[in-house]
Length: 353
Image 1 (tube, one colour):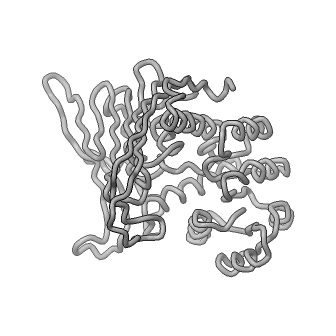
Image 2 (image 1 turned 135 degrees about the horizontal axis):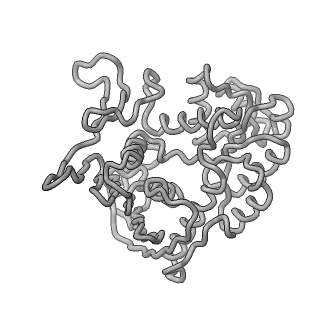
């Protein structure tokens, strides 16, 4: 691990819970006092540079979990040392940084990016139902849940679109909203403040589109519901409700159902067991018994998939090229929404840049 912040704690905690699959062998930070604190907190050796960490511990891969501006250089230096990397999102803060990083390491295929949203149980179940053709050919995805490149990744993944051109149109609207929660918990502030909502449409061509809808701090503000809509040629998903064609003169309505342990008189502990659809399990918790929340399940899935990839035992979970494409589209959304100058911006496929 390089870094020691809030997100790094997720990776370290999950590695400790999965000793048969993962071992955190060491951490690199910039200051001696930070190294002492990390060594105590995670019970691992701590070093003052990524190079020293690699030389002493020889890891299968390194998680780079540092502020945006530092990520590209640390990632590239590790790749130059022959080490595979899982870089936190985004892999670079801007378009120039993405292109520079790609020019330096892109062709070596040694970098994955820690994009976990499609691995959350609900989204993984929806993606599996799309794969099974339940709603026919997917044509439109609407996401009001998370921001930027995360939402773009969800839209592209659920549509199944690759690296084609994308036309971006976006606007921003400001309105009062009570914001009682942030990353640290309840704020105690009960006065509505101005909040910005960004709306964007993504045109992937061939009738495939995405709608992006995000309000400031929507990750933590429970006064804004998360919504996801996936439309296809034979029906659609609206959150956990599915409507679809069932044959001549027949419309079927079903639900994605979560089997959640620990409710009422169930004494098996609070845990997610599986998600099912019409009597068939479409997602099963690979970490049952660890009592993980959805975000932790997704990160643990990403970590174990990266470990398999790093040992040449599995596919690449989210390659740098995909992360660059999704972040480039999210930057176009921000530009179009904030200035109006990018309205109708054409984002070319990453491979052509």
